[in-house]
Length: 213
Image 1 (cartoon, rainbow, N blue to C red):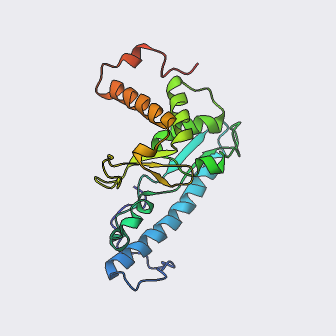
Image 2 (tube, helix red, strand yellow):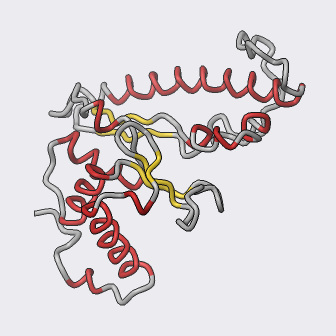
């Protein structure tokens, strides 16, 4: 797996050095420096990968994201105010030159924040593709609650709420009780779908809910 732990100080030519190391242990400093060098290598490898896809004469769309940051920031993690930022990673949705959606960019304001469960509906929007009722539900949910995810157990920070974190379009956390009525209804519908498909009777399998017209 590209740029995964451990992050030993093994790059002889590592030009990346932490700017402020006054509060960091040597181990944390080496890990951050090594991880940063790995990101640089990954950036170049990703560019090479996309350039190769551009040479293929058929439409291809890529959803690319980091599933999580590495656990190499104990100093930053000791501050509760950093909980959210330590669980955020970049993403992009891209289509090659053979695709009708080449060069298409989703609205930056409404798509600055997302959770990985939304990516399929976002990719469909990017490609201007027909969608199933399920993807339509995700699109509507993303419109009112752009990102929802469990961070770590007990990290919700919302009193009696669960550990699920909800973000608005500006990346601000929303307490569960402060969600709009539309968002609450859509989330309830989403939970029912998840239950039916994982622990329920699978009633939706007998419908066209997941079918693209």
